[in-house]
Length: 60
Length: 181
Image 1 (tube, rainbow over the protein chains, first blue to last red):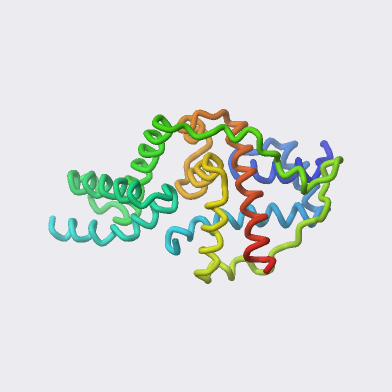
Image 2 (image 1 turned 135 degrees about the vertical axis):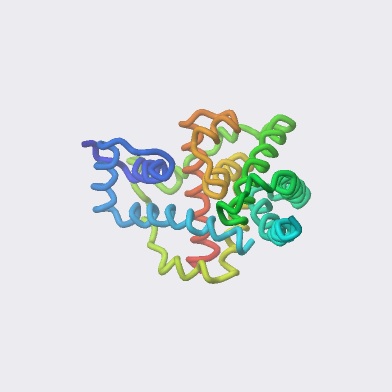
């Protein structure tokens, strides 16, 4: 397992919304998000954007 | 048939809003919706009552929007946007946050506020055209990476970079103009 930088972790969190991450990628990301509050917040917010866009059509 | 026709017509305002989000152009959205309604009315048997009418029409509209994007891409290809840095300023030389982002307090509550969506649209409008188009094809139309790559003529890796840039830029923008006010 590779230790990720925050920049790599945010990229991987984004890609996780668009493709199936490999086992090693998932593990590295999970470990990083467990110890990095900033990246965990960004990963949550990226997922929130998906919800917001889904509702945008009703509120545009 | 008249019931079907009036049911289809009743969906026009919703479909227009849906198309406007992606196309950002009233005339183009009107065209896409008109083509959708004509296609639906030309073949009502295809609906057959097997799903929600709005869902069925939205499915047709998605194809019309993608057709429009394909035509628009041929007529005026979008700039490459290759020179955008990937938010380097947010990270130090080792790739860690200079200032760690703070978690948004109860973001779901924002989904009940119309002003939030105005802020979101402002932030979408600030994105570079190709980045915005890629992001909305993914998140609004629900296209897969393969389809986006094919329609926009980009590699999967480039597509993921564009989506990353869009999400990071939108997060920064919403932090400034909504959550961090």
